[in-house]
Length: 564
Image 1 (cartoon, rainbow, N blue to C red):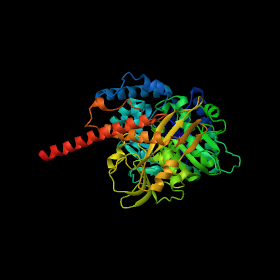
Image 2 (image 1 turned 45 degrees about the horizontal axis):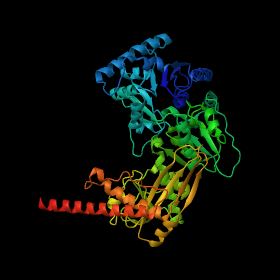
Image 3 (image 1 turned 135 degrees about the vertical axis):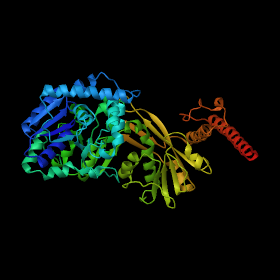
Image 4 (image 1 turned 90 degrees about the vertical axis):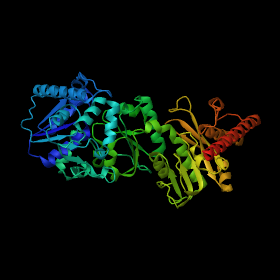
């Protein structure tokens, strides 16, 4: 008998293909966790699996009965002995569960696990029974740290067990590791890995077996109306996986992603299996919302066209679908914590296009930027992916966020300063003297998603014409799904001068070993709706005074060092 143990639709798809191609005539048992769908959904899934007759028997394992009733709670203070007690209880529970389900391992000739850190999978690992491991999702075999950190945040017991037993396929008793080789990190190698690309392997199935698998998942052909632009596919992230797990927050994140990368295109949404499809129909009534009952890796066999983009925040399926789209927009799972930093990035690319309408990919470079933001934005607005800056090259535009010491040569520098530390001034000979400022204002209304905010770009250039063009640049960008408007260059000349001086003051204060805490002007706003001549004179005088104190402190430090 062949045993398969998993906990997702992707696992089931992998097991179906593996069983048909490798063990067509042998009996096989599938044990699947009940965390895929609701209770009624799991009942339907089991009925569909039984009807497909791919596996001789399917057993649903109730996660709550196992891990959540384990009396040994694990946390960061738990030592190895406590973890071992947790594992020992799991062994006892699994043996009772197998007896109840009349599942005997005595006749098993091959073990296949896609989940080896919980329940039956943990039992097989802790009992040191050799098994074949299926990666949890496309590309995750080489990204063990991603899974480890996820478990550490979401369920510490799984993290502790993983570290103690070397789960996630890292144990020496693993005999083979099935993984999508094309989705792994560049340069990754594991001598136990065997390529398992579900889309290519699915194509090797007979037409009859292909239809049997498609029917199991209720996967039907997708027919879209003819439109001038190709559709964009959005693969959602399960809302409970968010660090702020509310539907309102998820709505904002999803709406902004579609505003940024799908404007003007028909939108197709494939919900995560644990999501509620109906919610997406309510949130995005103009989009086509697909059924959630099939794994996204089957999409190439359901849609005959090619998507303009496939977008996701954290879905591993996207790494198997690269051949079915013109462009992949893969946002990091931590995107939700960075999302408010995206507006300066958007502004910098529109500014680049305004200053240099014909700029080519060799004439622009970036440094210290969030590439998951910048790459799709550049593709969308400029038509090419940005490159990291290289020493010795000369650029027309250099966009920088995190600042490092460098010897790059560029006609114009655009500093995003999303950390608001003004570190760019540390590496500029003239600091703020030749800096122009561009205001970025995000405005909302009562029905808007997201929040109002202000930011600034700091542009350095020796070209007077470029400086003048920056001064006169303004634009308005509307995001219809979030009901947000972004304004660039909306402020008056006096406001910009005030904010530029305040930026220099804040920079000096942040460097401020020469300043006493009470002298730091935190009570002064960096942004004012109205700036009078008196306001300008006040910040000018303050800036001059702090500059003098800074210079005195630096000179004193130099003298002290020379004396020593």
